Amino acid sequence: MAKLERANFGSRLGVILATAGSAVGLGNVWRFPYMAGENGGAVFILIYVICVLLLGIPCMISEFIIGRHGRANTARAFSKLSGGGPWSLIGYMGILTGFLIIGYYAVVAGWCLQYIWASLIGHMQGSPEYFKEYFTELSTNHVKPVLWTVIILFMSYFIVEHGIRDGIERASKMMMPTLFFLLLIIVGASCMLPNAGKGIEFLFKPDFTKINSDVFLAALGQAFYSLSIGMGALCTYASYFSKQTNLTGSAIQIGVIDSMVAVLAGLMIFPAAFSVGVSPDSGPSLIFITLPNVFSQAFADIPMAGYVIALLFFVLLSLAALTSLMSLHEVVTAFIHEELVITRKKAALLVTASTAVIGAFCSLSLGAVGDSMMFFGKSLFDWFDFITGQIFLPIVGFLTCIFIGWFVPHKVVHDEFTNWGTLRGRFFHLFLFLVKYVCPLAILLIFLHQLGLIN
Ligand code: TRP
Figure 1 (cartoon, rainbow, N blue to C red):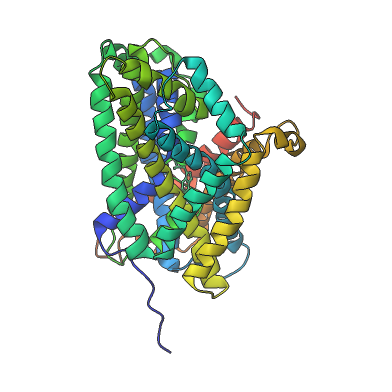
Figure 2: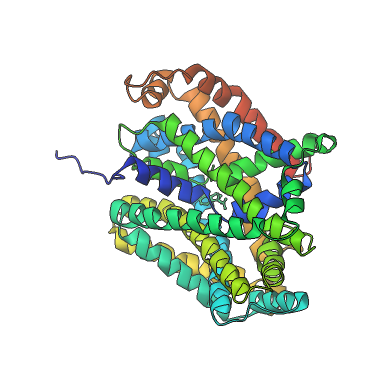
């Protein structure tokens, strides 16, 4: 029987940029810089890098191995490697996590689009109170954010629908370099402001007194989230890697790019914030309230500069969000396309429609209708964030390590790790040790810590 040819990424660069695109997202900009500043600066960054190298990268490689071995969507890839049975459930769980995350990630990505628009028409200027009101008005509005959510989902749809090479790879090759370029421009502008040095110091000044188990676990949690571990995205992309793709090398390059973007995001935010004496925070309020205000104040003396920087910033953010969003879109699309045996286009459309409904509910849950959608004191939006990020992600990550470390025959793992003996695989034993013992233990600790069960 003729074997169906499965799509592939066309080049090494495509592999790196697309996968790094999945990893580089809102987490790099709104979470990492603040955590670094609050948790000991350079020391936190050092711990973070160690977490990426020793724990994040082995987990990434494990997902790559499962994906490339399976050459199919995440659920089937798990089931192929395990010969069916209960392990396939992890694959399904990864897909479900991806699916649920799209809903709220698209809402935030939609806000970014609205802010591009607002910068263009000159609305990104005013007092600190103005920015606060602007954001509250937008996020609780019943129409606008829902519309933007649908728009960004359709943008993602048009990319995913075009397949791997013509869609995801091509889009990544355009969007990622643009993102780096914008990042460098804003970092340059921010670091040239008066008093920028204070911001740089905040980010990099090592403060050893801040080191405790909290900081360690925060760095670890951030590393996993930032590398997109545990949601089927790495596994799905790896199913399009070729037999020559060096899994370890790619994982290291992606880890380095992701960490670099996170540090540069800090250099974009803090010098500007400190220059105008605004104390930065994290999460949505950082990027949608504090930063527009910071940019409009910091560049007030140069005509148009405030507008332009705000505009470039939200374009950058939208690109980062879109490349992550499309990787999640692909996780679910590949699954539906292959399991229900319908065309990629139909599958992608089905995903777009169903996530648009979830996104709309998430968005509405933040507004007045939200009162009827509060469950145990959390809005639907917060529930999605909590269930996916703090429950499903660690469970899938943990079980993936256990699966690769303890259940898949080592020969299979070794074959994938060394590209069937063509690579030396010097780090194989270290990899296996980390995946067997260190990673599962570390994930278990973050999980219990996040749930408040240990300190
Ligand atoms: N890594 C993304 C970020 O830094 C967030 C994320 C976590 C993600 N898991 C994912 C994105 C899976 C795409 C796919 O913002």
